[in-house]
Structure formats: structure tokens, C-alpha cells
Length: 71
Image 1 (cartoon, one colour):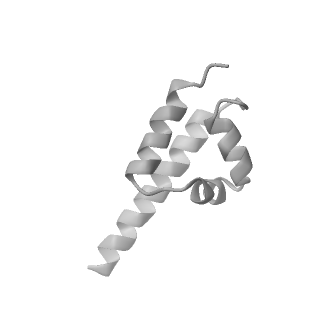
Image 2: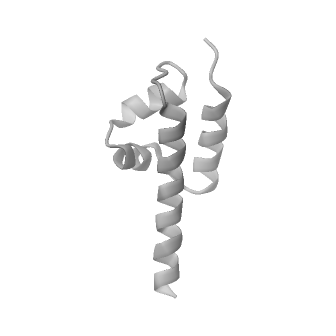
């Protein structure tokens, strides 16, 4: 089974920004197990790339906003 290239890039972005699968799952309103299945290429729901990337970007943006408020 081929793993989609976008999932590898997204996992790298998550790692570099300290975003966990659990946080991504919470942001998306799905289980961590399902996140793992999608990122591993075992499940390929339509529109997953856009939804997952947007959710990771939201988490990163929210952290940036929180860090600015602390200054």
C-alpha cells in the first residue's frame, strides 16, 4: 500500500511544531486511532488532506496567538 506523500509532509510539520496526533484528533473531532489510520494511508477519506492540513494550521495559529497574548 502506498502512503500518500501529503501525510508524510504533514507528520513532519506536526513534529516540527509539537502537534500530537491526539491534539489533531481533538481539533477534527475524531479519534486518535482514525487519525493514525489516515496518516498511515490505511484509510483515505475524501477531503482528508484539506481537513487535516487546515486543522494542523489552526492548532499552530492558536498557539501563536496564545504566545502573543503572554508577551
